[in-house]
Amino acid sequence: MLCHTALHRAADTARHWAERGCPIVIHIDKRVSKWSVEKLQADLADLDNVRFSERFACEWGTWGIVAATQAAAEVLLQDFPSVRHVYLASGSCLPLRPVRELIAYLDERPRTDFIESVTTEEVGWTIGGLNMERFTLRFPFSWRTQRWLFDRYVKLQRRLGFRRSIPNGIVPHLGSQWWCLTRQTLTAILQGPERALYDRYFRRVWIPDESYFQTLVRQVSSNVESRSLTLSKFDFQGKPHIFYDDHLQLLRRSDCFVARKIWPNANKLYATFLSDDAEGQAGGEPNPGKIDRLFSKAVERRVKGRPGLYMQSRFPNEHWENGRTAAPYSVFQGFSDVFENFEGWLGKVTGTRVHGHLFAPDRVEFAGGEAVFNGALSDSAALRDYNTKSFLANLIWATRGERQCFQFGPGDNQELNWFMALDSNAQISVISGAWAVPLFKSNLNFADIRREAARLQKIELEHLSILRNGASKARIRIWNLAEFIENPMEPLQTIVDEISPRSLRRLTEAPRMTDLEGFGQFLQNLRNQGMQPVLMGDFPATSDLRPSEARRGRPYLVK
Image (cartoon, rainbow, N blue to C red):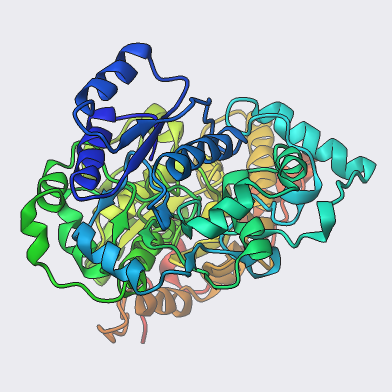
């Protein structure tokens, strides 16, 4: 048993094994305090088949774990000559089936070595991109505590073309650290004439505990079953799954003899499997594959998750989201500039929640002037701008089932332009150049109007460039101002049909259009002042475009 933490649980497990006829040799990490070591030794002092081996510092990925395993195995083989199989476990391992069943299982297979051992070409579980390189490069630095030096030294070796030679032409193999080997095989590895050579080589191999015995067993054993009798599952990052009390039935279903890693405070698991009650449960051939479906589902939920819901395991990783938002939503750019009370009209026609400018610079314009919206979202612009992506994702998540519509424009925060363009849930409708209408109706100094118009036009040009990018996934429609007001009913009908496809409602009246009398001359004045408006379309400077009476502020009727 290799132990480094929760030694009280290791003592319980060791006693369970020892009292049922299994000699135990315990290795305790050299970094564990002296008081803890003495406490464990005292707890097991009454057992005559328990030993303690020489202590090594066991840092993950380093040679110390192999050295500890070698030392403990040598004590076991020397002090207990009747042992036929040696089972490697950790202090966080827990026997799931009666010890007598494991003994009987191994009695039927006296010359079989149970150790996962596959070549590097067949490995699909390694994390970090180091398969064969872990055997051909040198790794003198710790991956966990000296990560900067580790990465730089690997890059340096790659750049220089450094490559270590593999001794005696052995074929490197990888596999689980937890094995069960026969006395003959383990003795051949530990007492082999080339051990010093192999030890010197594997000292600089990365994570040697997953390759030392897995490689050398192929040199000395004629009967290898490439599997572990220990249930040990890993997540997508290569970290072991931890089993808790509510995994009791799951562990029983696996029929495995031992499982790791058990949470030290899983009192129910320890009470159940370390008691005589476990003797009565039926067990068949160990088959962890029976529960693989549940682990696969857990990994998928952690990596992919529910659409539009962000969580800790995915949040720092770009493009790991399962859909940027949870439900469809509509973005309208320029419509509230062209139409009066556009939000009220759209909400009435479609039955949706229609907001104002959610990304306005001064505050979030929630529908109805709300200060706090679903999901406890505040109308504070500062809170919104702290993480605009989370703001929008939370808004859509908290209101899924009710379509959200909001206004947008070049005067708003532009941080989410790419986010919305790449969101397949977004429906983006743009009347380009409509931002000029509020300037046209303002009483600002014309020099200030020209500067503001130039600024807004530059922003909108950049936004339109993003929307027209080939990578965009949103449903995007763009009209210039002139062509839109020439026939507004057709685009409005298309938009309404998409928002409410089941209504099949034909529009008979558009919202009241703002008065654009003199707008063409306004654009000409901008040109005369040296600013070239290019997003509005063709507005004659002398005579205004008059598609209907809407230009004089009256509703546009469909005859």
